Each structure stands twice: as C-alpha cells, then as structure tokens.
Length: 517
Image (tube, rainbow, N blue to C red; front, side, top):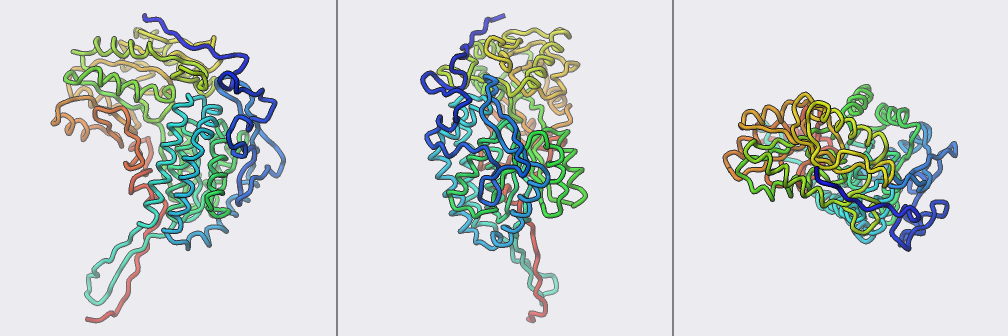
C-alpha cells in the first residue's frame, strides 16, 4: 500500500495560519477584514436578536475542536416570531416589481463577491474545508444571486386561445408565499443562496434554519442582504441546536408557511414531508445520493482520474453529488486503480487555513465513525485498501485519510449506503447492461457520472441511468445555469437554472368571458 503524508496542525495556532490566530476566548471577529460580519445572534425583521430565553449553543471548529463562538438557541416561540415577521413582510414585498427585486439581489451579489475572503474564512472555520475551496464556494454561492437577479424580471405567463372563441384567457405567476428553508452544513453559503435567491426573485419571503454546525456563514449573508437593501422581514435566520426537532416540525406544520425547501438526508426528508402534509405545502427536497461513476475502457484514464478526484474528494467527500461507487471496466480496472491511488497520494490533509493543505477534516465524530465502518466492512469482506483507510489521529479527532478501496462487491455496505466521506470504492464490470443495472440498483437517484469517448454509448447510458443528473467526461456538474435535483428517494424539485424560480411561484389562470367576435 502506498504511504500517505499529511500536514500536521499547528497546535499552538489551531484556527488560523501562522501570525493571524487569536485565542477562541477573544472575539473571533478580529480575524475578519469586516469584523461586523461575525454574528452570534439570529436575524429577524432586519435585526440581529437573541433567543427570548437568552439560551445559546456552542459552535466549534471541526479541525481543532476549539470553540468558535455561540449562537442563539431559538425555540418554537422565536420561530413563530420569525414566521409572523416574514408573513407581514410578504404582504408588501409580493407587490414589488421583478426589476426592483433584481436590483436588490444584484446588490447582494456585489457585496458577497466583495467579501469573498471573509466569507471563505467563516466557512473554513465552521465547516473545515480548505480556504481555497471555501472561497470557491462563495463564488459558486454568489453565482445563484447573479443568476436569479436576472431571472426575477422574467417570470412570464402565457396568453391562451380559449376553446369557445368568445373568451380570452391568460396566466400569471405569483409568489407562493412565506417559505421555510432548511439547509445543511456541507455548503453553508451555496445551499442558502441557491434557495433564497430564487425565493426572493419570485417575490417570496423566507425563514431559514441553517445547520447548527455552520450558522455563521448564514448570518453573515443575512447581514449582507440587509446592506443590499433587501427589506426587513424578507430574509429571516433562525438558529437552533437542541430544539431542532420542534423547530423543524413547526416550520413544516405552520399554516403561514406555504412552501418547504430542504436539503439533507432522505430519512429526514420523509419526516419533513409527513409533517408538511397537514397543510399541503408546496415542497422541494434534495435528499441523499449514492452516485455511480462509470469508467469505460475507451476513455483517457488520466482524464478519468482527474474527473474522479474532483467528484469524489471535493469537500473531503462530504457532498451529495460525490461519486460513491466507481464502476470500472475490467480491461482498465487495475490501471485506473493505480493511477487513482497515485493521485490521492499527492493529497495533503490538515487544517484548512494551513498552506499546502488540499483536504480538511470531516464535520464531526459521527461522520468519521461512518467512514471507518464502511472501510472495516469492506476489508472484512475481502476488499483491499490501496491507500489511506484509517483516521489521521495526529491531526485531530475528525481527520480521516483519503482512501481508495479495490475489490469492492455488492454485499458491502458502501454498495448501498452513501458514505459521505473520502472513500473511493472500486467495483469491476464488463458490459453496458451490467453496469447500468448495478448503477440503478440503489433506491436513490441524484447524480451520476460517465466516462467514455463513444457518442452512441453516451446517449444509451445517460438515458438508462435513473438519476436526475448525469455528468459525461467531467466530475463537475454543478452550475447555476443547469437544473439541480434528483429522482427516486433523492427527492423532487429543481434548483438553479430557469426552472429553479418555478419552485417558488404558483400559476393563476384568468378567463375573460363574452368578448364577442
């Protein structure tokens, strides 16, 4: 097995690069160019506020375990205040023109781009991804603001020829109302902007519940929205940790919330859908995945490995569109495994603020335990680890070595469970029919990847794959211009693209009778 090297964390300066670290007991905001972007209160009605109870919860750095700061522990009463505020704001905001909303969102975009460095530092601090990757996420997050600022004035209806000849009919699209937005920790900026920018562009108001692991990025974006002139009450941020279940249930069951948008696990999505059913809310869910990455024997293996690394190890394997199962044609299986192992050997894991680090920690101990379980299960059933395969305990409690496993079979957990960590599991196949059946054998269907130079095969496989997205000869499929979403147990609805704003509007038809001939 090839050895693995990594950069040790600076234990004397666990949060930041040399010369810039301040002990957690001091104000973290001093590490930002704009210190006012660090907020420890929730955001309701254009103001940063404490929980009514005064309760807070601690937020820690996954790379070091150090306390970053606190956040407001909001309860159902606090949430109701946010919902009422959003409902009141909707009465006015829904009447604004698309062009006016476009200018607001564009100003929000401009401020976000201008503060990329600070937002990136917040993401690295609370999420753990490298600073370069975090700043890349900010750019990606901002792209949804730019996109939906351009879509806001173009929510078109239709003129419909009536059947009887004397009536005239047309449709208008109107904002659905107050939207509940629930976002995960793995993209603390982009998962918010992809939803909120679309909702605001449509004329909706929102109540956002970010993940308790990563509240600060959401709160900083709210501050920038306030500066951009987005009216008070249009965007509200409710933070909670221990009250997650009761707050989530109220968000789904409140009759004042007309839509729920959620990104997270399939199991939680099922629970939220059940809770939302009592009020028949409009829902869009982006849920779990188990992405296949198919490598045929006619492809350039260097290109395939480059795409595999990008897809699998972005965010240390903690993205919903990460390749989870690598299906490699038997004719190139050994060569691909060797090249992928060599590529992974070049990684450097460590604190995301340290120079030279390519991959950061997992988000918490539970995530690491699952990765370890998948490796242990695979090796116990005959798989071989070619690199990695163990925690990098010298770096901290949440670090795990990027791993390549060969000889993986269908009876192993990784074949049916999403790992959400840095394991590339290599399966072997020989025919098109076989690999399509294997790829489709899971109950989820979010992203999939296909590497081949055969154009006819591209059409056959892409049409046969039961996934909402297919990447061909690339490991990067996320783009504000293209629809993002899945099928089967990966949920429904689409985000981004021209279709994304449709999730936040309703269609009203108007028929005018007795026009005459």
